[in-house]
Image (tube, rainbow, N blue to C red; front, top):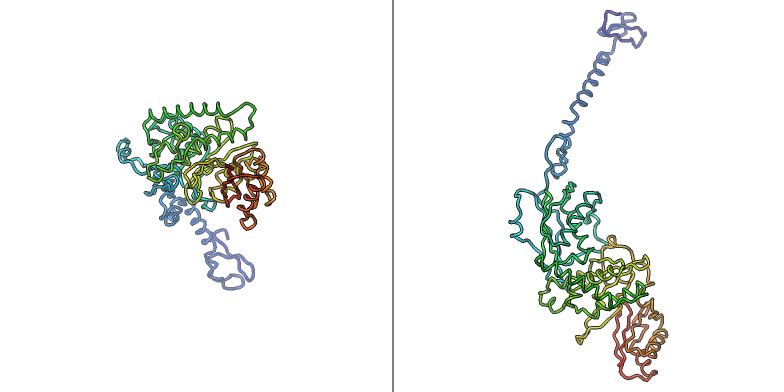
Length: 462
């Protein structure tokens, strides 16, 4: 048997015979033809498996190519091919700003394009409006870009902050190398601008894939630096006059809020004509010029509160159907919403009044006429430092309302503001309650207004 290269076993008698015999030499049982290639089949399979292993990279590329044909950015680079980018822009598109913050400068600047050297580099443009239109909490999470926080990103943030504060027009920053660099840079800039009210008159930027960043402003550099200096100086003067020793953070916040409302006028004339100047979007407009729109009010609140040692954020969202900006203030570790713009209403007769309807509201209350992307901001859940709850200017029934009004009148106040909790106009006859109080207390003329959304009644005694 050793002379044969291969043996097979007879299925009938179990004898071993040469592989090329057609029948068993012992019992004459015919051998099955299909078994003749058994050993060769295994050898073929082993050779085939070895070839697949050796050429696996080439085969994988052939299989992968059709699936990635629709998205050239996903093509594997293991063969040495360069990454191919989409031709379309990936930067967020700024929305037009309607009332009350329209006339924001935005658009493309041909001169800015022509002056940038290095033709051939991919460029992304982003012109930021005065207030970026923010979606509410129903916005798809896919629209939000997550900013990586590594050493390189921290360096980028530091460099851009320094450039914006110095009103510099160009700088070269490290390239993040994420494939989404432009949007990451735009997000960092937006975060910096909203976080520092001393950065003024920034309008937008251009980012090139080699790291060149060009910043655009609505004013020249000397004007910007001078305006910032005047604003900071005026802020310190104001704080020195309204902040008294021993004040709590709540009292400091109230003093700052009341000063802004009493000393700034909403720039409604320019807004209606479509000629709102850049100054009205800054703290400079509030503290130096005394005229601003909502972004200016929010920046001034943040500047004064931060310099008074009180944490404060600027919230960008929508209110009453329009793009809007207001603040969130932290007191004793809890956040509250405060909207100085809407607390500075213009009455039908043209006079402006001081209101506290929007002073330190929780999310639940301010969401009655404000919307914002809640995932971008801390939660506000308590009413402890709400103006009306803190001072006890609340009424839970018509009898409470009458008592609060009577107490205010007896104390000699010429204006009282009362918030009716769970206000329902069917349950409260405000005109009747006011007339009853006037008659009982022997008063002459009484004027009042009702904010039915929040149940706040303001009464002026002449």
